[in-house]
Picture 1 (cartoon, one colour):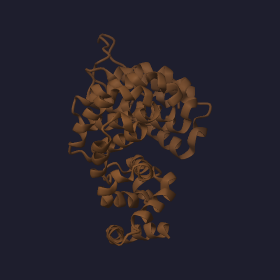
Picture 2 (cartoon, helix red, strand yellow):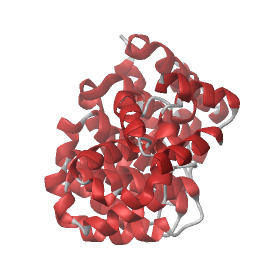
Picture 3 (cartoon, one colour):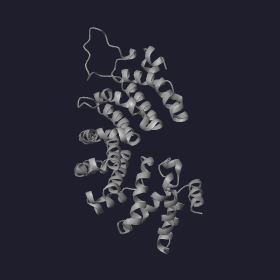
Picture 4 (cartoon, helix red, strand yellow):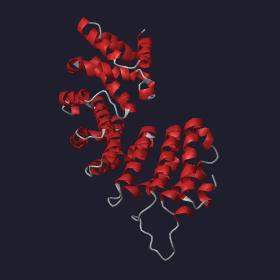
Length: 323
């Protein structure tokens, strides 16, 4: 841990952050026990660009908007995301002290890569520390909308994810902005970056589930279902599956014209190698819905064709879960 403070080589610092990230993912919060305050102090210095490896010449004027090492920022933010995921709300005492340093990277003059990295951290903070982040939700929402005007697809991807999380967790704060959010995401739906588009689709699914009366429901549902299954950011499939399951019970008539895309998505949801852990909680609902939709002869033929389009190993997994 002392390397973060004592080493002047940026590559070494980046590797230390990467190693800590991997350890945190594999071993959980226990690996940080007794060291978290020290790590946060060093990460704060790195974010402020005042660490030993970032020292500038004494005769140069320090400027918040000066060029900085993108690799260092990426390493620091990736580590922070891992720590937030394993620590949850208990990390808020440390996170509040990091926010001023993180906010430096959201200034208009900063490059899109800076904003993308920091928006990823803020999104996970919202997801994992909702009680603490509630007070910052509206500011982050407005920042995300502003960033999306830049038209950078990577930045828009993270902004869509962030907006979806805010709509899901802080619906009362988000609803007044639904029209603006939908307008911003409409541009992402039309972009060529599949990951960005997938995050816009999953964000729309979260919005529809959270406040179906606050938006043009039929149009939104059609936009979501026309753009599934997700093929760029598979791990966002969970939000879409939750939406499909909910609406299959509450408004099935809105799903009727999209059977093929829905059946494909339900198959993807049963393949954790594709969708990660995002759909695990919905597996029983997915199997039940697939069987219900395949009950009539015409849809059964379509369902069999869809399952047959997967490779042999994936077909075996899907069929096992159906049985």
